[in-house]
Amino acid sequence: MLVLFETPAGFALFKVLDEGKLDKVEDLWKEFTTSDSARRVVELKAFNKFENTSDALSAATLIIDSKPSKSLRKFLQKHCEGETLAVADSKLGNAIKEKLKIDCLHNTAVMELMRGLRNQLTELITGLGAQELGPMSLGLSHSLSRYKLKFSPEKVDTMIIQAIGLLDDLDKELNTYAMRVREWYGWHFPELTKIVTDNIEYAKVVKMMGNRANAVNLDFSEILEDDEVEAQLKEAAVISMGTEVSDLDLLNIRELCDQVLALSEYRAQLYEYLKSRMNTIAPNLTALVGELVGARLIAHGGSLLNLAKQPGSTIQILGAEKALFRALKTKHSTPKYGLIYHASLIGKAAQKNKGKISRSLAAKTALAIRYDALGDGEDNSIGIESRLKLETRLQILENKDLGKSAGSTKGKPKIEVYEKDRKKGAGALITPAKTYNPAADVVLGQSTEETPKKSELTSKKRKHEAETAPSSEPVEESIKEDGDQERKKKKKKSKETEEIVAVADGQKKKKKKSKDTEEPAVPAAEGEKKKKKKKSDADGEDAAMQTEESGKKDKKKKKKKHADE
Image 1: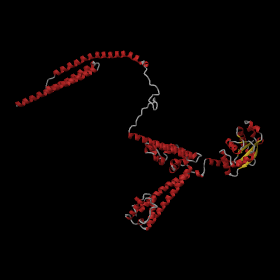
Image 2: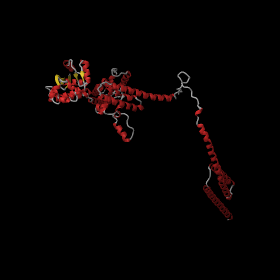
Image 3: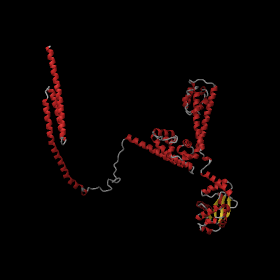
Image 4: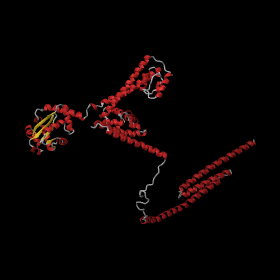
């Protein structure tokens, strides 16, 4: 039996001299305590050395993926004919068995044997010392770590951060230069500003035309797509109210136009570069939110790996930090979106659905970023699937709103009768009709027993009311007699005043009688209080009458004295 062992310097094949010792797995480690005892168990048969570091890295990466390299296949075909091969990885053994038709073995005894070989490796392989093996293993480990972390020039997101920053700066500079061209050339041809609205087309027209007098003889069809705009330009050039400028001024204006056109061409080139880099580094993020929004998210987060550590709620408001902290400070509603607002999916949504779509888009974007940063795949399948799901969700939200508005305008929908017991297409019932069961009416006996009790209670209430009614009558009679006596004492002044007082007293009596009949009984203390109040009212009226009489008598005396005089 042969043993395949991988080292940083190459592949080694050891022949097992005593296979019987493999049966005792627990005591196998004792055989590798010294180099002499290890040589009695295994012996080096062949060694395949790596040519350089790249060869070692490619072989090691294939071994990690459980695949034999080309050099390893040749090495095994040469030395393993008719032998059983012990390997440390069962998947690698299956691959060798399928491709090379070599029987492979992997069990606990083989793993214990591998530990012993690793312990005495420098003694068993001649010419491979510990001083040489250390730097080899260190260099190979660094190369493998770079490979695992995908640390390659194609995966560097620093270029994206620099490119998107330069693209934003170019947009600002282009806008500034274009506005300067419009303002400068506007002194000579002010009408052109309203006729040609695009900045790049404006710069091209100014560069071609120069003086406005040349506009009639030029053909602007290559620059201006619309013939009507070209006709308006030529008409306005003839009747323009602008000032005349010298050739030197026009030369400087044309040079500025050249700068604007050069900047626009470089911007287009930079955008194509950014688009290709985004599709390479973050394909799923690009499929979800686009190149520009994805690049701005990466630049704002610092790197793709830092952005992958952020949750979806943070990605949703990334770029709106000032608004968030201002809302928290003033206790207002927090913002619903930041840089992600410029994504096409949020732009398609209605205003009331933008918050829901931005929340869903941020969650899917977080997953896409993590897959791009840490996943092994380089396709954009996750981004495309997530985008389709978000589009269907947006359609569902929009259709809900349409359904609500349609129902409110057209009126209420028809309500169909739900008959679950009827067969489809037939009038007969699936289940028979239920019949009334009189034997189940046990409640009737209880109700008949309770009825006499209720009648007794009603009769007692009536008797109590009848007893309380006569007790209230003498109180009322006494109140009436007192009122009559008090009225007789009053001196009659005029018949009209007496009739008004009598009518008012009659109305008061009726009200009192109705109140007394409703109430069961009037306490004696309340009756005495009413008498005292009426007596005080009567005394007050008598005093008022006496003062009026005395006043009239004084007037008569004065009149008599005046007549006598």
